[in-house]
Image (cartoon, rainbow, N blue to C red):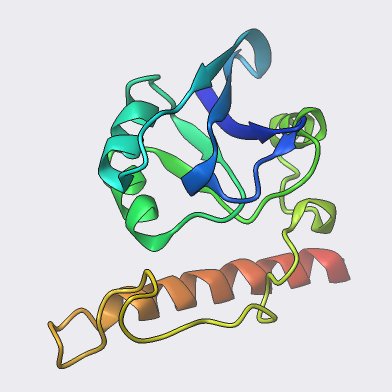
Length: 157
């Protein structure tokens, strides 16, 4: 399995869309067996997704990612773990120990504090009646709500 993490000054890059360096770690049986730094040159979401798929990365751990790029990465078969921040070494260790839900690695604004924008020109598909894509943003909101509820449950226990 290959895990890609966009890197900026030794930390997870806050916005994957503009990240230029990606640290790719190869894992075998839960152990790191190789690392390489790859430079991403594409700015178009589809081309950027193709570059990541060509690594070939199985998992991408990143901070924020735009809606078009997220769709392109998922269509390329890459598993996304978003809204993660912190030093790359700690994030990778947390991933290996299956503990990325830890509040220490959440980007600020997660779990209901983030403001969702709606309408045209902001990375979300048009609203219902414009081209019938009403369900896509709603599915994403439901998914984020479930993630946040699970994180809150783990904090209470």
